[in-house]
Length: 50
Image (cartoon, rainbow, N blue to C red):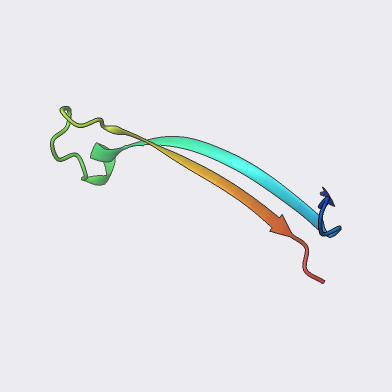
C-alpha cells in the first residue's frame, strides 16, 4: 500500500489478464470461423476508507 498522490489516502491496485475458450462454456457457435480465444482484462484500484 502507498498514499494516493492526489487524495493522500492509502490505496492499492492490480491488473490481471487471462484467456478462456468460448467452446469450454458452450458458446462456440461458428467456431472455428469466429475466434475461440477470448482475452479478459481486469484493472482494479481500491482506497482505504476511514
